[in-house]
Length: 302
Image: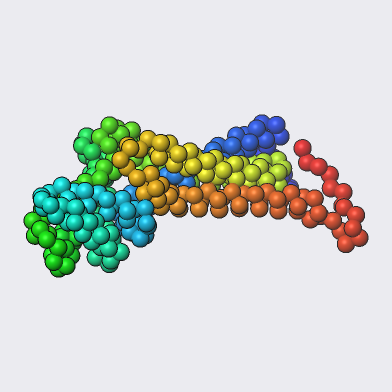
């Protein structure tokens, strides 16, 4: 006696299936910018070596060098009382500091200062301390004093190596940064992975998968565009909130260096999303044409 075939598995009706697929795809596209930010913060900003490597090229940036030179010069000249020679000594110090910012010793001191500042930021965010985080320029001042001594500048031996500090993170901002830091630590790589899983599930569940692929690509491009816009708005807000004595050009250079990977990711996702959407549309329009040139007639699936 023949065995009867198993009963067909119940399938989700087309409309609920399409609605569920659309919800999964929308959620996946929404996670794109958040996943990019979480990955960037977790694997570039939080990692000390990567942070120092990101900040290292700024040692050669003209605006950053000028800001460091001004801060060190002001700190040094405040400690020198040269009487009638004061203006001449200040000129020597300023020239020496600016010259020093072009040396390999300055770049090494810059990396050392940034490594210490990054460790201080992490400690403040993880420990719950409420003190401002600063960048200590003492290693640079020490090198400048040595150079002035070698050049025979008067009163150079009287220069004390003070801990000249540039504020990296204000105490009143630590609470908000700490909350965001902990959220990004938890998110890590899970957000982008979740976005990929949701997108794959939405496409597989969709009734018309080609349209689902195109919609996912366009949604990814839209999320990337929003990410790029958020980075630009954050830059403007950061520069507008600077104290009057802080160099806007130097701050802009630092912000651009820190967000370079994030901006690149946004533009890559935008380009890939638009390319996939365009390719999917072109395939649907011309990909099924037979050799004779007339499009084949394929019954549509509901």
